[in-house]
Image (cartoon, rainbow, N blue to C red; front, top):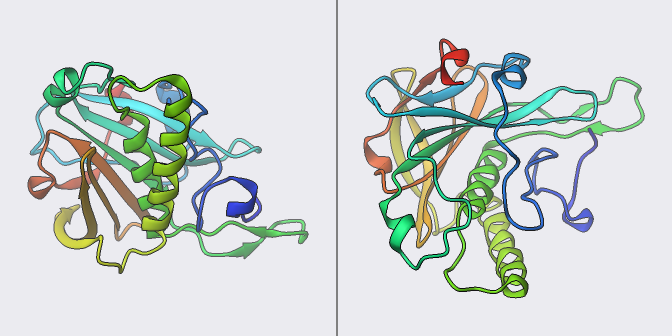
Length: 227
């Protein structure tokens, strides 16, 4: 996969192909466990302290079928496009964990290009755009939705590229039992986290209704049990 750029309309600073929301802002349909089982990296979810429902979301694949990243949901399955002002969205309590393998910039196998690097900014971008996928201002028509999504996506992009900026704070949360620093921010739509596990996986997370301050993350031991 070649390095992407903002000129092409794809994802920023190492965010992999498939990270961008659809034109409607609706994420890809939930997948079966098959795609998750093909990943050469471990999947992360909330640790055992979370006792609510867990469910698989989407897996992003490269052109050659390589798994690039994926998401696992916890809690209530959020409405994709909540229309009622505050009603449904305010009752939803969910957290989504995004796993993306850490990859440095490297030459492609045929020597003709550069493979895209991934970073904590990649995880922040995936989490920020994921939260947008489940957020629509109430009573907004189709045309304005597109404009709103473009504007908010640009903002999420810029925020992901500036993790040391004032919009982010630091939050320490356990990952596989090890205290780990995450970049954290809140918005009117929910919260976003981004950090890295010692296993070589970058973690993004987003949610609404569940406090991020009490969360912990761990490797999923049996991904098939989430199906």
